[in-house]
Length: 111
Length: 114
Image (tube, rainbow over all chains, first blue to last red):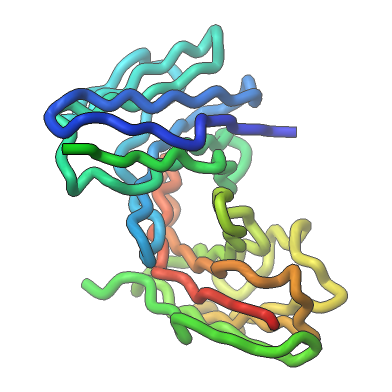
């Protein structure tokens, strides 16, 4: 079945770039997403990328997709304390309305 | 515009007791989802509604879980009886059917079964 894998933790210094990586198994994935979850809150869609794109940039966020390797990454430039959260990678195929989530990467920021 | 509303935010019950969670989606969103999020995990879909019809309930443990969305707007998820392993955050999400399937999540109900 479909599976999405990501590392559990990432610690970066304030002001540095954060790179969160994700791999997925479903070759029919059409959309790939990055969601952010702050403590006690639901998930918030940060950005998504269509499977025929290699890169998408949105302000401090850059998403890179390597479809051949089924690898997705999220780069956050100039990481701030407000970026501390759990980041979920997710995918869906065009034939399904459901989204498969990874287990999340907890991003912590050190001064 | 109000987001997805869920209640209660927290619930503590003893095992074998029943419990119910309520969700009001964003106005105009026809699709409603219930997810379960275990500690340290991503959300896992329990059931998806298109209007009042449950179109995907393959992951819903039907022996103890039930859900309804009678008028195609708000929805209730019930567990009866609850077991220790049901402790989790239950998330509700909705969307309006855009092509990229952006789902808007509520804050969730954190259930603790003792």
